[in-house]
Image (cartoon, rainbow, N blue to C red):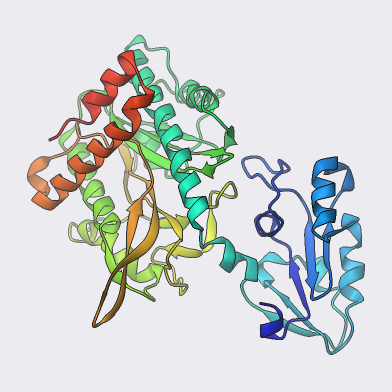
Length: 413
């Protein structure tokens, strides 16, 4: 790839790209299985700049077998400065620090663009997708057990947002091949859910009560995949406005999940599928609709993005992306429904190749806050089919009260 583009050297400073291209994982950054390092690739060499003490003998041997040289982390600037004049150095400016960039010598031809590895990394192969599906089933089991625990115990008055968040981690840890959370969970009750990036804490405990809405946005890293999911659930009596807004968010979520679009369509156009049902009611949300998700890597990954902010990179086959519309009413409530999907081929017609999304997330969507009168027949069918799929995939791994809870959550409306 480098040779065809006339590139002599490719500098990579983004940790997830380095982990991807070398097929290694680590734990230098909380919730991100990466190692602090740099990578410099040429036609005849591949140098990894890293604290050597972080490498196990097994990994060191693996890198050596693949002709990857290990160098001290601190010498990257020196090696960049040694690149000869008239050579072409390719890098991504947003992912290159000042110390490295300022080391580039005079006469070096600097070409900028997306890391070549980023373009490879965002297109998941069949094995990555298959393994990710396994991870989402395990994550679904953990979430169902968690939500059953929460709804059973909320009436005791002893569960806070932070206690709930920690309990979810316990359930995830019980799953095979679990590594760690993929980000700090957003466990938000009532008005706190109106803050999209709210963080619960023990210092400011908020009790979860048996009324209103509760939002949980969380995810996990497993050795077979990375997950990210948001569900908003009814814990008791709801206000009419909460039911109305929940139904609108669900309609927006379904609209994107069911979208059919021409190859070459970017995230700005796809965003309109989601916001249409909200904009008709003069409602909006001020965050992106979808972000890429890594494979046992960063839970936020590019270059694809679905949102109003300009993103010209098209959605392509194999890209794994979130679908997460929301409505946030300050001081009252917040609602978000998020599932992860993979872009796949749809039909080829006389107008070109069409694409669509296949869902990956396997956690029931709560139907208790749904106003059925606001839903079309197609939307109701989608919701019932989705929850039926969740029951079929999760029920073999659940028993007792957890299985009863799943059965109740997956009833048709």
